[in-house]
Image (tube, one colour):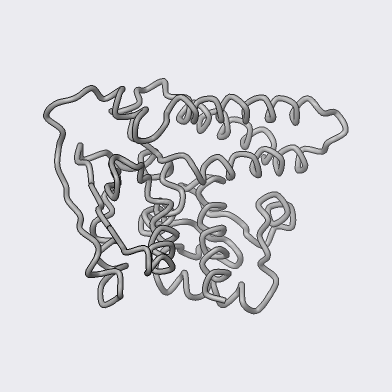
Length: 247
């Protein structure tokens, strides 16, 4: 139950962000619900939206019109890291998380990994994970008064020696991620070229492929990957296609 609520909440936030974070959107639209796979007709979904309003991650403008807030974007970035640096500036700090949970407590270790899997973390060395995202406060909240607490350490700092390109490939596998984006570009092109598909069907195909890739993109800042990084190019292309296919 908890997982399904979290997934529904995250899907709503992602939909509002992908549509256009700066505008309210009509979530009751059947087309939008189909394109973004939003199951919003159940009492549970309506309860989720009420809780999201209370938590301040979305705001309601009028009946059915909702907009994601800055708080909502920060929450969403814990599941889809790319969104953070399309909005916020990087503070030039890296975060290192260390956890070494004994094999006999594998279930505890695996549950922690699932919780932090969307934080843009990459394996640096054994039991050390690196991310440019400001996640230390979220980490503190997550592990406080839990069995994880005794096993987790976190650090912040700036590198003083070493090649950034080497780090990007070693920790985040940038070359492989670039190939994944090129594969998505090909699928987008095939979908857009399919004359048998409606605009809504084309947009759903584009959204589905994009979301799957956003789940694994660590969302690295432009200062590390460069202004022409393919992930940011894909973001711009997606926005252009959205404007054409969802007027």
